[in-house]
Length: 142
Image (cartoon, rainbow, N blue to C red; front, side, top):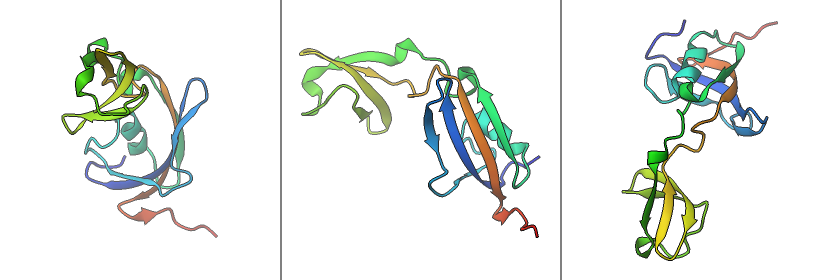
């Protein structure tokens, strides 16, 4: 079991129940994070904690163990007269400088915004490989 405070590096691929891959580190550097820091969702971190360097696991997380269920109270209307020029449905913008929302509808009077995480309400499947712990990779065999 990997202890809190350990710095880990993992390769992963995340997919939806439809099979659509929503993110992968396979074509870039591994994801690095500190165990116990809250940098990744709990279910992902718990799976990594149980691995040894070089091991892989495939896990499925229900929405409540991933980004939570959708919360319709996080969908709201804003006055359209304060919207930036060229705003389109599907755009992701920051409110108050740090709160990401997705524009879901634009009328002459209002802009409907959704502050739910893009993956809220969805079960996620991750294939995770532990690459290193505290900078120590798997031993080279042979």
